[in-house]
Each structure stands twice: as structure tokens, then as C-alpha cells.
Length: 351
Image 1 (cartoon, rainbow, N blue to C red):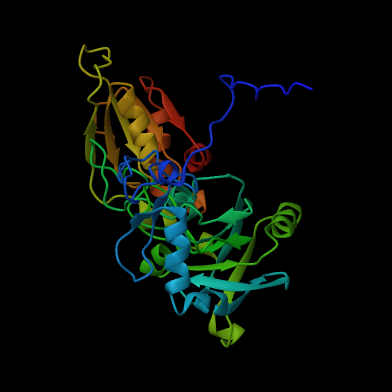
Image 2 (cartoon, one colour):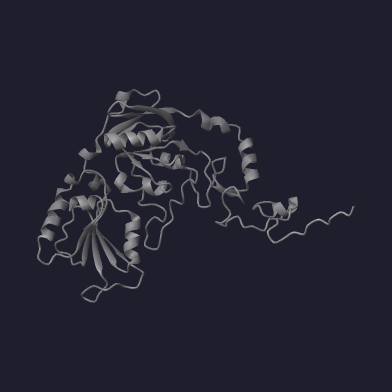
């Protein structure tokens, strides 16, 4: 009986790679033709940048070397011995979890965010000032935190909404101690420690979110294990003028690099923006439209300024705390020649 020859390989068939060929695809291995700095080579496929296990700067490691480095670390189980903490709501509801970030007790208003990604942007959003932020996405921290010092062409933080963390605390279901991303410079926990902001994980964030949604936003506090509940006094951030805390102190002019959009006078259109806690991406959006943006403090008297439109930004807290802003807006709107006025979030409430 004649034997059939082996089938030829079509274009869709994979040719087995020799061990040396496989190594050539991994950055950092002998014979590798891949660059360590390439942002494409990340994740568990071809290696990624991870924080070094000796506390040094992040480094690129192929997956097999990452595992070897972990095994070589004598106290790798230390992350499993984290301090406990308890989230206590004003209505007496309690959730026990594990602390990360700064190990301190804090109090504020408990709110939730349903975004799947973007915790660096959310934490630096001034609108979350004074709030304990619950993220509903199940795993947080797996891509770490990007470069804190990077700036765009107008001097704003490239990867954040402001210069610092504004949320009072972070609440998540699962925190990933192992962070991996081509743009990583810090782990989320280390970044929180730098700003003395606590985090807590192991919380049923879905149940917490449903509770807040049904009962309404409520106050709460995080108490570290071993501390008395009375040692963390409850704070209501809405009793404070949070806008005054996050607003800039002096006017600042941003001029777009895009082709100018002209106003009625033939010059580049000028938008005056009241900073109640404006996000960096809002400023970048205005710049993309070819205008210039005059950003002023929350209580700035702009009656003597010339502008083509007024924008009132987002911000934290109770709008009734901003009586000076309300007075300036009322005077402008009552003018017969009032320019267009637009507000979002807190800005819309002020209107």
C-alpha cells in the first residue's frame, strides 16, 4: 500500500520555531533583534516594562526573566501580608478589606466611577476633591502609573488631569501588585503613598455601588486596622469651599498652536474660562480649536476683560459655596451684550 506524502504547508500554517528563533523575538535575550525601548513590545507577549524588584527604576524584562526575578526575591510574599482596613459608611454599613497606598485613616464623601480604564486621570481630576472614590472595574493597578514629569506642548501634565491626586482615598475590588506597561514609572500603590492617599481593596465594589445608588451619596471613612473609629473623625467636604482649594490663584493665558479661529474683531478668538477645578484635557480641547484661553480663578472679577465666550469648568463640592462666582455670572448674564456662556458639571450648576 502506497503511503501519502506529507501535506504541504499553506500560507495559513505555522512553521515551528527553533529555541534560538523563539529567543530572537524576546527583547533582552541573546540574539534578540528587538529594541527594549519599543512601546509595542509590552504585555506578556514580548516582554514589558515593570518596576524592578530592588526598588530601582523600571526595566524591560521578558516574561521568563520576570518570573526568575520574582523567585529570587526573598520577601516576595510580603505583599500578601498587608494591613487590613475597614470602610465605614455613615449609615453604619461596613466593609473590611486590605490596605494599600498610604496606611492612614481618612473621611469624606463616598462616590463611584464606572470607567474601565483611566484611574490616573480620575484620581487627578479636581472634581473628586474630598471624596472616597470607588472604581467599579474589577482589577485596578495592572498598568501602573505613567511618567509624572512628562509635559505636553503647552506645559500641562501629559497623562494626568492636574498636578496631583485630589481624591481622598481609592476603593477597589482587586488591586494588582504586579504592574506592567511600556509607559510605567510607578506602581499605583507607590504613587498613592507619595501623596499620602490610602487605598483599600477586597471590597465588593458592585454591592457598594448599588448601595450608594439606591441610598444616595453618603459620607464614609476608612479606618486602618488597630485604629479606633473615633480617631478618624467624619468630614463632610460639602461644608468646605473645595473650589477655592483647587482653583488657580492667578490668571493664566493659553495660546493655541493650531491655525487661529478668528473672532468678530478679526483677531484670534478668546475664551475666558473660570477655573472651578478644570481638567487638563478641557484646556487641550480648547487649544485644538485654534482659540486662546484665558483661565481665571473662581472668584475673579472678569467684568473688565474682553472675550468672545465664557466657559465655567467642572469642579468639586457644593456650588452654593461659590457666591462670588454666582454674583459675577449674574452681572454678566443681565447685560444686553452678554457673550455666549457655557458651563459643564459644577459650572452648569452655577448657572
